[in-house]
Image (cartoon, rainbow, N blue to C red):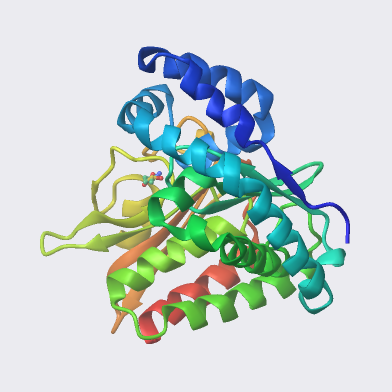
Length: 316
Ligand code: SME
């Protein structure tokens, strides 16, 4: 097994040498030290400068200070324990198969771990502040193991735009299995939230994934989604790509949104969009909407896959 473990928390604890009003400056230099991971962290958490400032304001110096003392003593013990456990488990986890590295970092305490695919391999980022706040830091081996299991699932099923059609189609089938497993027994709203999350997580060119639901006034109301917040929380039938898909009950696959007249822009980054109506007993009850930052990114395979996803949501 390659060396898979790197601890960058020392850089994070540098925040303690800044006065709180300059934590934004700290973050800027922190980001320069770990650009690949922290850029993706910002993107995945929809953090623009304003949101970042607010989140940094909410962090407590006392909390980070206590964490730094804890980690100074416990960190080396936990790390050697984890390495020992991983060594034992590597054959069973097939760890040597994958090219990845685990970075232990501190961040804003938003999620335990994040998978960051980069051109130079995958990074599994652990946010030590989250583990501290949740108490899972006391069972750090389990944190790492959960992150690794998640990563192994990710590398088994994730779809990249550069994959050939055969591979994409194979992977789409695997994602359908994961979706089916994960939505079982959940409410309709929870299912939509889970599907948005899994589509965002596993398909690299799906950059906004979410649902709209039809209300009594025949308008589309924003439901669960993952991605940048949108101002289009209510859309009339016929308006924009979403409204047209609802009106015509047809799938709209738009390879280049800049060429559309009847289009409602959510983000300047969006280049392509696909909208699938959810039809029950001949009536549109809502729709699945996906935006991509890549022009021409959706094709017949995406359409077939997403039709099956809608089927799973409606029928399960
Ligand atoms: N672009 C859509 C609006 C919804 S956002 O993409 C989330 C449209 O033209 O209807």
